[in-house]
Image (cartoon, rainbow, N blue to C red; front, top):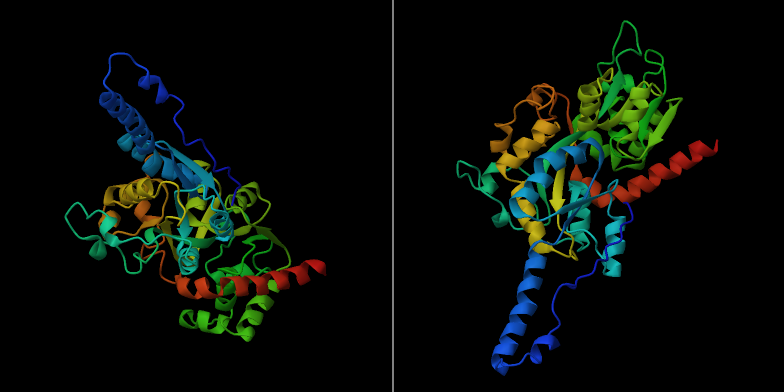
Length: 390
């Protein structure tokens, strides 16, 4: 997470000093103190109502889409400014902020597996389904949201996918059609860019062994399964490891790599807005929930709840999916997804949940990751350190 200074003056420098009225001639004492009370309460209350909402999100094309579909409309509707800070996921910085009692964010855009882990540690506030708006047709949220979207401390707003994309000009006469092709450096030679993380890489490596989808996480729960996955990754001769979500897009569009893992929305942005010669390989997409959470020590939790209700409404979810192709968590919003405002592309064909894109989807086991991520990642990092030392 990016380091952010959360400290801002809470006082109102324009507030008259209470003592200045106490010496006003001709005013009864009781009236003086009534005026003092009004001056003390009213301006502060107004300032609090318009305090800046501080959001922690992911930057890049995703944040630009959120600005257009969520943040700017929320500010216009409420008069409340929105300040956005960026991070690369995880909960370590939230742990430190909570421990120090200096949480700078009111609401965080967080993967569901991270949200589950943070909730288990008591880092998040509980969120009741009652704070959500019904659909325009009056459907209650608990019926309108997709299964698994409403949890104790997190509300899913979108479903995104980690996918592999490739350069269309890299392999004359052939194109990758299967996630197995990520590991076929003979038929599809050239450097790959992969996230420096066990997540997605391990699933893909086992799929390349023809492990059935339903067996992936059972096998990854064993040392044998982890070793099999890492051995397959080790067969790739040239991997560029990335951490920031925009890096694989830059590596792929510049020609530094021929294949890259990344987030489907960022690849779409490069394809449509930059006309990059790349395509998404949907086979083996690792699909997961993206959620809104409110930190336990959020400075403005009431404002965060108002934003959460606004941002998860049917209209806002559908509008976000028009700007970046992430599947809405509400059924009523999915029915309202239309064209990309700039290119006119039918966004329904680009979201991970579309039936054509989800034929061989891997549904990320978020509960498994919430309980094992740190151990699995440590195992992965130890393997990577040994590889880099050779």
